[in-house]
Image 1: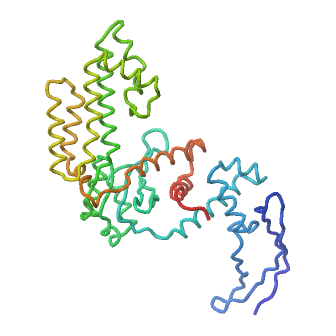
Image 2: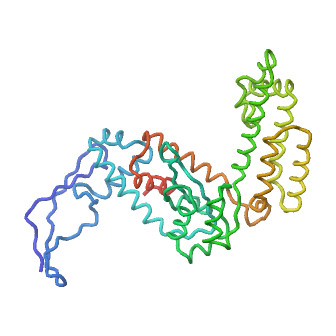
Image 3: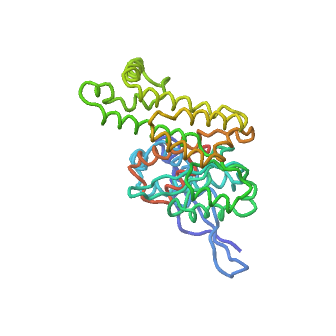
Length: 354
């Protein structure tokens, strides 16, 4: 049995330019035979906010992908909280359409969500190129284990490769929860350690020298740490002058640049021979920061040598690119205090628009 509700419901749809369309609806009420209650008819084209259609909610969500909530609210003459709610509905619909992930190659990294060393873990599917999990309370082993608990034992057993930095808790959690997965250390993090060692040599040389000899080093930090092909013509000239004026910095710079050859080897034995030769070249150079990096690489050799296997050739730049995208999202909104909203933004930033 059903009858029409006498109440008039007005629905706004602003997705057609500046034209405002109002729809007058008559909503039926029916007797439920199961619970003997009176219920209203469900209209699938309405958003969670019954004053707006789903089409308009998706329009707001698409606008929020490239603008702040405040900007979209001012453009459409809506309340700030209304725009945020419609954007959340849009992102939840994106995740529902993407489906439940079952990754074979994952990338693990942490992000700072606010000052004070407050971290959350982001896990990505490197084959499909999308983040699939955001959570944890910090970057501990227990927080990393929450991802594998969310994924489940069956899907965790299908992971064949985990790309991460050298943070020990990530490695221990992966070995415990997905022991079949090979661990691959991200080469960008390894090269970052070498860059820090080069900067430490630069600082020690600046402190050791005095007078006019300092002028070649002063203000040249980023000239020294940048890749040569990314420098301007003036930057290349300054780098050439700096390396000619300081022998230790020249040696440290050449050692850092030559280490990049390690990632081109396709057999572990060749890569190990290169590393031993590189390490031997540090002898008598008095470069303590480089010796510490060499010891660290030796301790984590298995995760670095995994680069040589053909089945482990994956796009390692995705994790760093995702981190940059997350920082843009945070900076554009001057920080997101609602963690669930930040989670939705991160998980949908690589998904196609609806």
